[in-house]
Image (cartoon, rainbow, N blue to C red; front, side, top):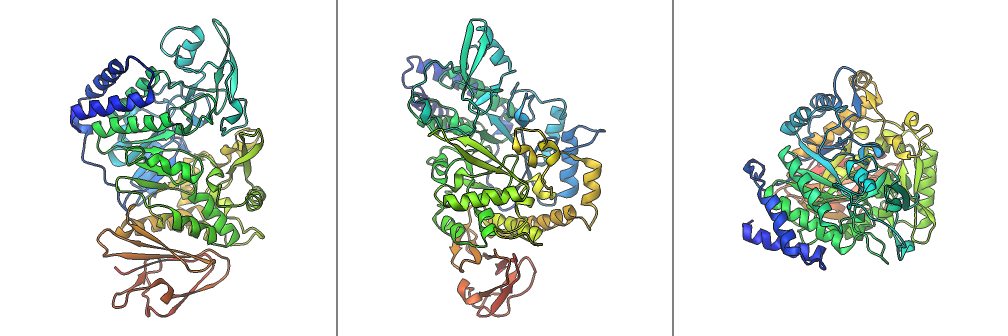
Length: 574
């Protein structure tokens, strides 16, 4: 972007973020100078163009540990040994942290030495696309910024929200049940501060431009570290305004646009992804007009696939899929089934009724899971997410436990991998980890049930044993990823059309940009055999059709196919 145009756009966005400030021109010039002093042209690169080869592994630095080496080295070794087609990795926070598994950051520009060194991270960035978390909403109570706030002097002394009598507190949308305001002893007496998530995580005040400037410098710091994928954690909550829900505020969107403008100016191959675990319609807004997030988390997909396989009915998934707008060029959905967090329930609002939701929650608890809650705007305690390993969420259907657990699990991943968007697989799904009750014992954070820490030697032994569940799941997912990576019709922005094949079979059609490859993605989402009339999916006569999964040829486009329980097919013409 031309420098003059960049400076103008920067100034315009700052006017929208801080309309009442009288020093906007100086502020804009100061930020422009910081950004434009970033001279290293090696970070510009070509425009990032994602494709069907892109797939992320979501993992902590230390999801696998070995006493003989630092976890980042172990992670690199695991990726090299056990993944065939994963070219990208989302490494959850590796900065020094005081709680919340890394999301209570003490120092944004440091790497926790328990995980390894900057050299170890650099080693990963040379082979893989690396995504990191930028935790904007809050910082650790143990951070230097908050220590200075308590002293009343130094950097950070004015970075936090002091709460007196907040008007409209009841309207505030909460993701937790803890008390929102916390009293803190400071050198000038007791002060109340804002804590959206926990009392160890103190919310930052973005009404102070100095906070925004700090994060500009943090982004530049990581660009220099060859990081180009940035997950904006809990971004929806960063702007607080009296008498509002303090979520998805206009200034929040302008701040995302502001960060996008800077990254596009400096690094054309960088990607911003917004983490907004909210109802679907609100989530979609974070695409903006192709000037906010490059990617958004497709939060509704995971709980809807779970619902579909639990009830053996594709109606709701089909309705949602039919109404989802295709991402525009330059945007993409980020699809996943599991992550370090639980399976969010807010994205199901408007798709699943209350009775079905309660039945699903109860069933997950019967499968060994837990439920985390939040406080609603009416003061009620309401379910926020289901905490369970995705493998164990597939233990049975809504009315019985059966032997189809792994089949359902594989079918779920095949569905996710078929949808428009960039796919991501959580490490504990890739290696078939069950619920972790050891870490859960006595813990108040139920998310630890899906954050098991594997011993490297023990895990490698299981993964190399062809008889183990872990080996079978890893091999199946690796096979799916390998097949998928070769199909242009699985480009994240390739055409998608939802098929109507009844309630027991779910199907979507994908077609590549050049209209040369079609893939009919067919899934039996029930525990009973289903018959598919091939005439119902309109296979074109005169072309050779075969199933990518079984590698079997379709002999007649007017024939029938018998689908076993949870069987899936990728029928293509190439």
